[in-house]
Length: 554
Image 1 (cartoon, helix red, strand yellow):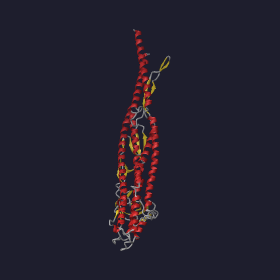
Image 2 (spheres, one colour; image 1 turned 90 degrees about the vertical axis):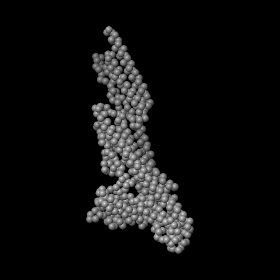
Image 3 (cartoon, one colour; image 1 turned 180 degrees about the vertical axis):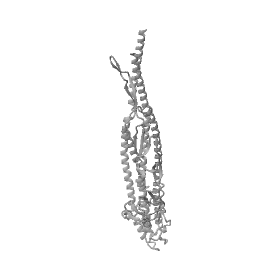
């Protein structure tokens, strides 16, 4: 009988010792990121039949499990991806919004000061100081265009750096998940599938959450204990112990336009969620449109001002002199061709009018036989699409809106499509073309120093609706740019705040389930300590009974 009591007591000692160790482990990891609270699951040993009935034989340690819920974990991952997406988007967009809407860094005050100086020359066309002030204000406005455009380029470099960093981190996390898959499968196999390596599972869940910070993923558990991870629209990132590698590559048509590539395929358009997608969305929805709009404004202002200025005469008798110089700005070309060897060459071509300038154009190859034909669509909707263009008529159509395009190498195929933004880099190249104040063409005819008829036309350009197919002034075009960026930034702020709340709720749900509560663990510590002491006392009783029995037979 004493041996039965001893065996039962020893099973209790082992069970409560393991419970104390597990509780101690929980307390030690209270601040460990990703740790899930563990608990010892106990089960009774098979009871023993006696003449008096069934008698219990003690306790077994059935398992050590972690607090885990697949739904809550998945919800936390998806909430993390959604928040990181809108947070990255808002962080970048707010930088543009703050810059272009600010009175000191924006363009509205600079344009207003310039046209005020033009009006001052109109009031006194023979005044050299007034003319010099007009040149100074023109130079200040041009420099402001240059500064804003340069800031846009800096943000583009920042986006590219963010993409490089995020993709590098994601690749490292994916490789670690694949390595953990190997270890987890081996540990589960060692235990014949009845015991789980809790700490390794926590580490893997933490890594999956960090991947979700970079991009939205789908996680599919496998029967052997590993997980498969898919990115984008089902592209495999981790399969068993194999991890794919993402890379950041430049577009074939624009070296500054980065693409996310997986196994040779551009998956940028397939991604969703996470910091990578947030940066891509900011670039495509805010940065690129803002830079195109700014460049179009610079081209429109320079074109219309030069047109009027070249029709006048300066104090020194000079004529046909442009006031602004646009140089040779970069033309942005985006698109994918079926022929990987196709080379697209697009150059800026100074337009004759600002009325029909669009920010971007889509050039589609519609046929290749018997000859290549194209369609040209203004993506801003200012002018209707032009179809049936041949190589000769294409040049006429494109030069009228500010660019020339050619294909010096490779083969065009039906379905090839390109988005071309002729004024993309124009704001950074804008400068004043004259330096002598006497060359300002204020007069309509020579030898009339008091003639202000031409400079009045220049001053009147401020209020004329010369852009957007005759619907917008220069100030209104810039105002629309500010409004577009502002509305997108505000929407991102609202979305970011909402996603932050959802993420906090998901995090709280996870903490309530799996987080370590020190008060609860302290109570468990006392409970298991008392249980251990009681079991130890039972061992003492068993020893006394055994000694008594031995003494009785001596």
